[in-house]
Image 1 (tube, rainbow, N blue to C red):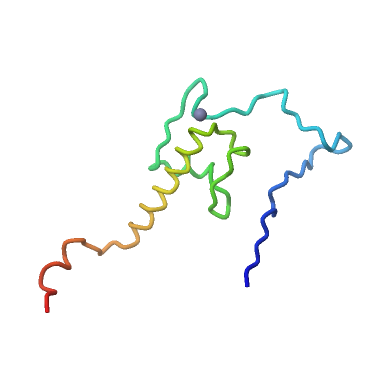
Image 2 (image 1 turned 180 degrees about the vertical axis):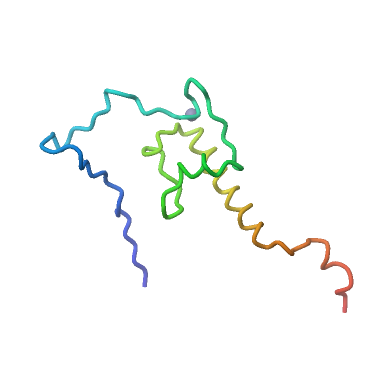
Length: 108
Ligand SMILES: [Zn+2]
């Protein structure tokens, strides 16, 4: 039983624009480019949760490139960083785990 709703919340509802052309999106005014390729290039840091948070949806998914505006190169970098950050967050929960502790004394 799976409920997959792929298209939820994906569309933008232009609430502020009433009576405008429904098909026209204002692309011309400002090019929403990659934040990491910009004039002041950001560094992708997986230890920077604030930065990564801007590329994650509320549900914890990685924001698609066409929404985030990243180029493909940096979108990959961001995705990688997010995965890494998740991994680290996961590790931090298992605090008492010491990799070497099982090899000694546990032999039957
Ligand atoms: Zn870029």
